[in-house]
Amino acid sequence: MRLAQMLMVTTSALMLSGCMHQQQTTKASSQAEGSIEIELNQVFPQQSKGKAKSDGKEMVFEVGYGKNGVGCIGSTFEEGITPLGTFKVNAIMSKDRFEMDEGLIKKSGRTKDYLAKNLFNNMNSIDFKGDGETGEYGSGYISLTPVPSSPQPFNFNEYDGTYRWYSFAIHGTNDETRIGQRITGGCINMNNRDINQLIKTVNLGDEVLVTSNKPCIS
Image (cartoon, rainbow, N blue to C red):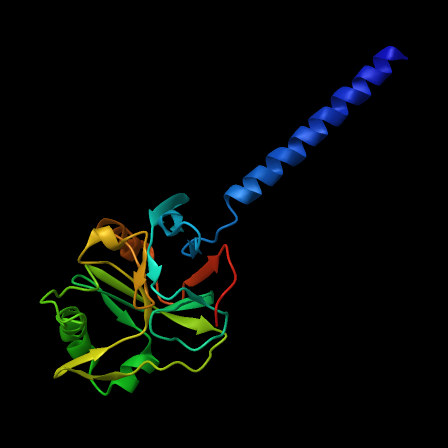
């Protein structure tokens, strides 16, 4: 009788161990290949981080966000506010890579070749703060559009005589002390080493989830 009880306990322990192992494996692999998760910390901005997965390996990086806080899911982009929610990548730009949704290319009124050659350089040449500093987007720019779609104010236009485009995006920086702060015009910034790595793995249509540990403000 005691032997039978011991066998039952041992079998139960093995079954429980197997369930736990399966749960841990599922948790570790729950992030989809190519997806990006951004976790904004409104209490301690320096603890804000992003995660991405490529070739089965997780990449973790520090981020900064909007100087005026975070906006609610489905909200229209406002200066200084980083919106929460689910997004998809609709453009990828760096010195070595240019990809953009066909609908955006058509909206631009320019050819893809023109955009690939000029757009990111134009955007990065603008001195937004009027302090003589350019290169606001660092070495790369990953544009995001909300899912489901909602009205946004983004357009191709001229800024101080320079043809450019702007959107909600993850991008690099010209000042890495700005990472981990509530400081941007609403975009998510990260250091150039990390944006360079992220641009190697991201593709058009990839999902980006932006969350926060505190409620949104608008």
